[in-house]
Every structure is written in C-alpha cells, then in structure tokens.
Length: 372
Image 1 (cartoon, rainbow, N blue to C red):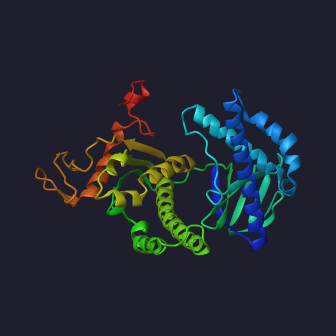
Image 2: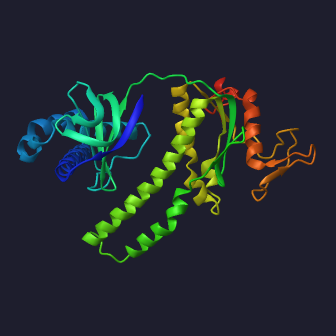
Image 3: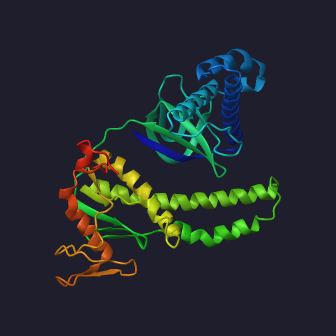
C-alpha cells in the first residue's frame, strides 16, 4: 500500500463545505462519546453499533442541517470512535476524549463501495464535487480523508500498487546518523543536515513573543496563531522532505542498508544536544526506510545499539574511547586517521555478517529468547 497526502486548491465556497463536513464528523463523534459515557454510568454495556442505530433513527431526523451533508461522514465518525475504544481496551491508547473545534479537523468519505478515481490535477469526489490539487495524482482508492492543517486543507488516501525491484548500484552500505551531518555513508557520501528548526527558531520565538499579550480568542490572536502554525508546518515539511529524498535514494540504489538501533529516548536525555537530535528526525528516518526497502526490493539491517561502531577501528579492529568532541578517529595500532562518522559507517557495513534480522532483532531474538 502507498499513501498520498497532498494540499488541496480550494475556493472559499469549498473551504466552507469542508469545514461543515469536519464539524459534522466532530459533532457525531462527541455525541457518540457522550452517550457512551452516560450509558456506562447507568450500568449498561454500550457499543458503537447501537449508538449508530439510535443516531440514525432518532437523532439525525431532528437536525435539519445534517441532511445537507454527506451521510458517509457520520458513519465514519462512529467507525473512528469504535476504533478508539478498541485501542483503549487493548491497552494501546488512552480513553477517548472529546474533539475540539479547530484542532485536528478532519472527515472521511467514500463512494458507497465504488472506487474513487484520482486522475490528474482535478478530481471528482463523492458529494464534494470537483477539487483541484497542487500536484498531479494517479490513484484508485476506496476512501478519502480530508483534514485541515494550519488553515489549509489536505487530501489523504491509500491505494494498492505493484512493488518493483530497482537495480542496485551498491550491494551493502553502512549509514551512520549524526547531529553535525544527517548521515554519512560507508562509500564516502555525506548528507548534510537541513536543521529546519534551527533555521527558523529565532523567527518562531519572535512570533510567540509578540503573541504573548493578545487576548485569547480575539481576531488578532487567531491570526497570530495561524502564522505560528504555518511556520511549524514549514519546519516539519522541510525536515520530512530531506528524509524522504535520503531514504528513497538509499532504498533504490543499495541492496542492503545497515543502520544502528539508536536509543533516541536516551539520547534526548542529554539536554545540550536534545534540540539538535530532535531536529534530525532519527525515528522518521528508520520508519521510512522500513517500508521503502519493501517497495524497492532492498533489505534493512539494524545493528544492536551496543555495537561500538564509533569506538572501533575499521581497519584493524582496535577499540578505544571516542568522546563527542573528537571528530577524527586516530588509531594508535595501525595509524588510521579518518573522520569518525565515516569510520562508524564502514564498521556498520562490515557488521552485516553478524546481523540476520532486518527488523532490528538479533538471531537470539528470532530463536525465541526474550530481549532485555
């Protein structure tokens, strides 16, 4: 499966229609959650199917404005409420909360079982009508989710595609992630970090400072909040774009990609480097690599986090301490002098033989032993 998340090009009438559908979905979700809580307090065992029947037969006919909007919206609102409770009962999430207007506004629609064809720049959506996108899309999907982020509306969907194995230029490559540079490959290629948050940190701080005394809920406060949200979106988009380009390049051109199982939570405990580490997006890098390797026929190998890639000489195997302030690895045994990140990436490439599981588990884990 592949997913699409793209910005919509809407006029004011279409934006109003999107906001009405998002409000419809939010209203139904909150209504179902409220009735669920009330029924549970009274000693009943509620379920989403019964809630949807009560809403369809008794509540919806009494509210005229709901007849002007797509009926698929409220059905998906109850489906999402059901999924939220299932995650809660399985211990995978917290108890569902009421949705607030203006925060994560979204709704889902489908074509009553028929596929939705997205072709080119203009697309005909069920009930919504013709909408335009800023990029051409070719996909066939069953349902579409439309959401609002920083004042703009986005279209999201998933569709099936045939994965193709691309020709590989390199059999094995080691990738060392860092703070100074985003990634250093064992073949010598260095990918510089975009440092998107660092670039806009001063501007973001200034905008938040100017917003400190505005009356909450006023027009000026809403305008300032929108500017701040758009700047946050820009920072996240720059970071995600850089990660997508790097992971696509690695998955398409390398047969085996060796990375280290980084303890990101532990790394963030270092408050001097926490901001820079969070700005790199290490988890997102690994997440993208995992599914792109499946798309392009590559293999992702994750080395154990305790593997001394930075402390080991890639030439003779000598191990020595390497504080973060030392950027060059100087081996006293064989005289090797090399950039520490390049040396670490070469060690990761050479460690392929000791790793057998491409999902980050060792051979002992795959044989049934629990990992501490």
